Image 1 (cartoon, protein in one colour):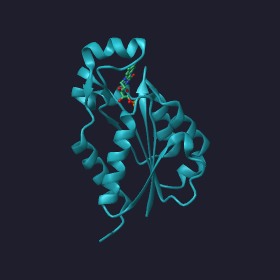
Image 2: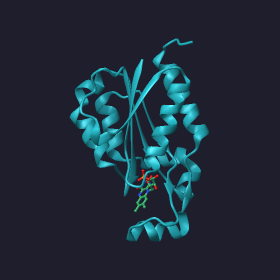
Image 3: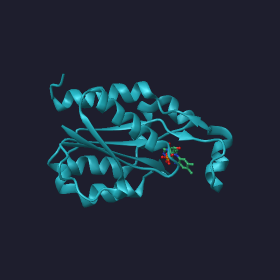
Image 4: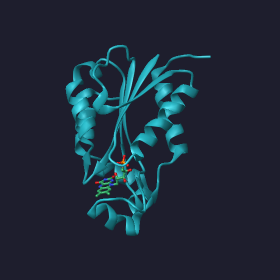
Length: 167
Ligand SMILES: Cc1cc2nc3c(=O)[nH]c(=O)nc-3n(C[C@H](O)[C@H](O)[C@H](O)COP(=O)(O)O)c2cc1C
């Protein structure tokens, strides 16, 4: 089984989450193909897809928005999961509450694609983040809330949902 793991990122944090996801899939004995969302030209050959992007000002990264729109028909025909990254600082301490603030594009795409699930992962903001607002935010909320254990658990559930047996 070959699974696409596609990501949209501005500052690299979401790529790290995608890498964790792909590694977990590989560890589970399945094949993961990790790609930048804007470089995905076709979904041919994939049996499932996991697509995630960073959230900025409550918006999902535009590359993933474009990907899910452009390939909606194919994504509807395979098991698909969507995720975003994600709250930093206080928001990251209570991720379940934060689900309500997930980017609307992601939630709308989940409905449109009949996705099997969505997930909000904590994000990362580096202390030296560039950009006026990011630098301001980083003064109070710099840190890394990407939780490998949460990713492991989620991927475990994804693989279980695919119902494939592997040795
Ligand atoms: C200016 C700015 C706005 C942000 N807005 C949101 C937001 O609306 N929702 C959210 O969950 N995270 C928000 N974040 C946190 C980022 O999503 C988080 O840092 C994420 O991990 C960045 O991913 P990237 O490194 O892949 O770009 C914001 C961060 C910055 C700097």
